[in-house]
Every structure is written in C-alpha cells, then in structure tokens.
Image 1 (tube, protein in one colour):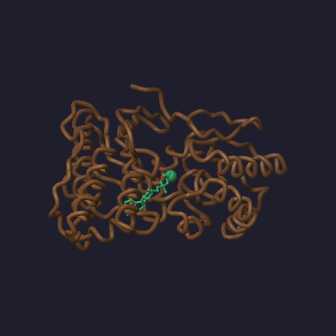
Image 2 (cartoon, helix red, strand yellow; image 1 turned 120 degrees about the vertical axis):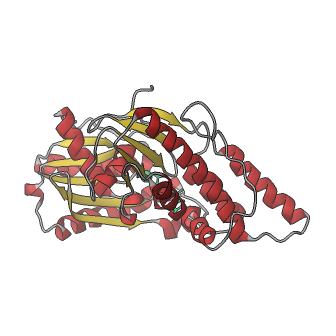
Image 3 (spheres, rainbow, N blue to C red; image 1 turned 60 degrees about the vertical axis):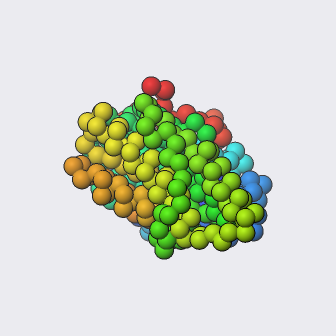
Amino acid sequence: MYVLGVETSCDETSVSVTKDGKDVLSNVVLSQIDIHKAYGGVVPEIASREHIKGITFVFDQAIKEANITYEKIDLIAVTEGPGLIGSLLIGVNAAKVVSLNYNIPIIGVHHISGHIYASHIEEDMQFPLIALVVSGGHTELILMKEHFSFEKLGETQDDAVGEAYDKVARVLGLSYPGGPVVDKLARQGKPTYHFPRPMIDSNDFNFSFSGLKSHVINLNHNMKQRKEEINVENFCASFQEAVTDVLVTKTIKAKEQYKVKQIVVAGGVAANSGLRKKMKENITDIPVLFPKMKYCTDNAAMISIAGYHKYMKENQVDDLMLNGSSRLNLVEEK
Ligand code: KG4
Ligand code: ZN
C-alpha cells in the first residue's frame, strides 16, 4: 500500500511516499529556517507564503524520487493540526486537490502522532510503550497500548521544552532555532551553574519549564549587570542538564508505573544529544527508540507512516470536508 504524506504545519514544506507503513521511498523537505532566522522565530504570514511557493515543486519531487505515479497512490495522509492555521491550510488544500483529481482517499493526521511514528520507520514499535513527545509546541508523556491508541499521562503546564531552548538561545544572543545551537555549545561545556529542576519530584507526569526559563533569563541579566562574564558553554550545559534530568526522571517513573516494553522519544528535541545520552544511560532494561536525526524534526514521512496505521486501525477515511485545525487533541484526557 502506497501512502503519500503531506506536512506543512509550521515552517517545513514536506511530501513523502511510503510503502506498507514502513519503507520510505521519498521524503522531500523544503525548510524555511533560513528565511525565518532573520526574525528570530517563525513568522506565520511568511510561512504561509513560502508553503504556497514551494508546495507544487515538493509534491512533484516526492513523486519523482519515489519513482511512482499518482495513479499508484492508495491513500493521502495530511497533517490536519495542530499548527499554524495558514500553513496547515496549504497542505490540506493541496492534498485535497490531488485526492479529488486522482480519486485517492484522504485521511487527516495529528502532527504529534506523526512524531511518535517516526520511530517506527527504523524499528518496530512494541506495546505497551511510553512516548515522550518533546517539540517546539509540545511536551507530553503518552501511553500507547496498541497501534494508534494514545492516552495522555501528563503534559507541560506552560512552555514546551523546544520553546524553552529557543528562548534561552535568544537571551544568549544565539541564532534561531536555538535548540541545536544550545545543544552544540552544551557539549563543549560543563554544568557549573545551578538551575532548578521544576516538578521533578511531583506526584504526576506533568512538566513545567517557564520557571526554569525565567531563572536562566534572570541569571543572565544579573550577571550582565554585575559585569560578570558568562561562560556560554557552561551556561548551556547547565540548562541542558536541568532539562534532561527532568525529562529522564519522569519518563522512568512512567515506565515503572505502566510496565512498558519500550520507550519512544519523539519531536524536534529528540535530536538533542544530551537527552539521547542520558536516556540510553539510565534506561537499560528496555529499548529506548530515537528516530534518525532527519525524522526528528518536521517531515512528511512520519505523517505518511502514521496515516497508514491510523487507516489500518480505524478503517475509515475523511472526505473533502477535511480542514486544518490549529488546535487539535490527540487523545482523551486520563
Ligand atoms: O518537532 P519540531 O520540528 O517542530 C514542532 O512540531 O514544534 O521541533 C522544533 C523544536 C525547536 O524548538 C528546536 O529548537 C528544537 O525542536 N530542537 C532541539 C534540537 N533540535 C531541534 N532542541 C534541543 N536540542 C536539539 N538538538
Ligand atoms: Zn513537529
């Protein structure tokens, strides 16, 4: 079964063709990062315009690289939300045009389900599993008892981890997106500053990162006023140490309570070297799956794979009333 995936929820225009929910035949990603860099973050209006400019080329390229024709595609899977509404609408409408033109069924996919299924490309998921979702907009612990079944155990009460990384980078005068830059500097430093580990001992699976972010901003400000020199590498290493301590501790707690067979780490922050290392060092009894780097940040292959499994589970598709939705729940609350 050939599935065409489409992802335009933020600043990547991406189309992919996958086979049988596993093999990636093509995964074309047109990133807008260099354009948004000048503004220190994603500008929604510009993102929409760039998606419009690139979408036809990205569709054509994905079909060409997969060495396939539209007539052979069995299903179109498109990110319906959450994300920037203007951006989402371009992917959804482009997908609907192809669906209508070639008479291919279409299915809307939740962006986070895509991030989780990115791990299924390389290795098979085994259930039950815990997914730690860490991206620019999400920080959640999800329990999956079977394919395409999601129970939310906890989530951030304020900022997402990726968002905190990006803010800290901005305060330190580093470029956007901040996550990879802070990660790189952290590898060159030592955690010599003491930063809080918010909610690390709380009796639930929730997170909070706004306090840590404020602490970092205030410390930076106070040191500057005292004309003390900041060791940026050590500063980044200390922030990363605090964040990853919280994420790993909470994941282990969920692993023990739900006696799962696997941990899956998903989303842009899954690319973080400190998180990868600490997870692998501290969880040795069950496998910890991290997607390949290219499947960590937004891409259509993960949407295509998730769409395949959604279709297999629910055995139904959407119609042309399918629409983009900036806010969309993945699961019922637990
Ligand atoms: O999943 P993603 O591509 O987009 C969303 O759905 O949000 O995640 C983007 C986020 C950004 O905040 C970026 O700074 C962060 O992932 N990120 C990282 C790293 N690579 C990307 N954060 C920490 N360390 C990294 N290596
Ligand atoms: Zn994402």
